[in-house]
Image 1 (cartoon, rainbow, N blue to C red):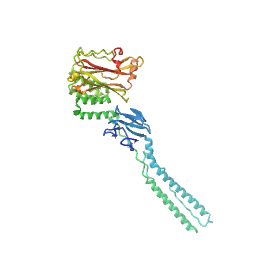
Image 2: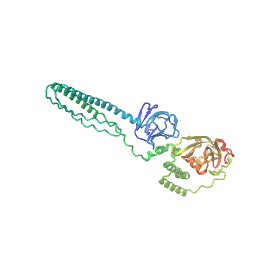
Image 3: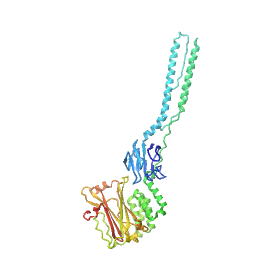
Image 4: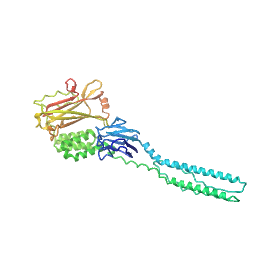
Length: 490
């Protein structure tokens, strides 16, 4: 159990007690803690139990801001008193120790004061009895009395442990006084006995008040067994995005739906339903090669036996239905080997019809699956005399490059990057400036494995984009620009 104190935003001043996780924070109505503030992503962050027994916060939206103690993080173990920034919303984390101690203090304070008062009354009663005995024996034997007093047993210390329900104290034992009078002085003895009886009644009343105190708060319920979705919160978000995209398929159109499915794959590369749906959509649009590429990509990203078997069956089915494509015309740029230098592009035989309007690269925060993730968006636009160009003839080839840290040599990357050409959907209009997307992904520990396998250390350097129409080069750009120079690449 832990608490969240909201320091800003729509919930400013509120306190929330979290008894079990995982808990998703975001602007979406389905979020466990909905933050309706501008700048908060639909599924912004998740609070979950860590293997060390604490609480861990992790960013879910790649382009969202998550900070702890003013330091931007992708995932971090929270400590008591940490200040969290979910977009513009600030809140403070209070760990389990203080939250439980606050509950104990409320119930333990009143009981401690009451028990102290009972103890003082008992001590006063015993003192009075001692004084009474001394006074009686000092009166020349006029009064001989025997006072037998059965004092109540001391109260047990209250049990205030959070997870133990204290038992009700036993009924107080009766207190009796037997007085034998042999001679005069009966009035004084009767007065003393009356005083003792009154004090005993007060003690019994206090004991009943202690028994009537409210018990400590019951222990929190045991957390529910973790489900598959709780173990994979990113999959849960991916499933919601998939359902939303399919529900909006009619409004998005084939190209828009494909872009939404591609976003899901970039966020959760090991989420098989996204590959299944993309392959199904490509087959419906009579694009069997693209459907085949989806099943092949699924084979590379999943380790689940049932999905691997299904992907292999679909690959064999599509390969049997679709023979290998005919060789490309001589004017088309040859296929580029991953480890050979790029050939110089062949100039177009006619005036270019399509150009690269913009290149936008975004780098995402490190997460549990990837040490590095970059997404390149390529915006295309027609040239004036190309408004009637067929969009299915437009293709793009993207090559990412790494640099050897020791020698400075630039080589095509071995990371996860597009191997096939990128194509526009047949329903896309060039005048709408369509966008193609390519991703550069470094799985967790990839650089260490690469160093052990090849004996060299690399880092990201840049990319080169070439756009073709009908096999003829239309435009090319690179970042940095020296990737276009013939003497830079090996």
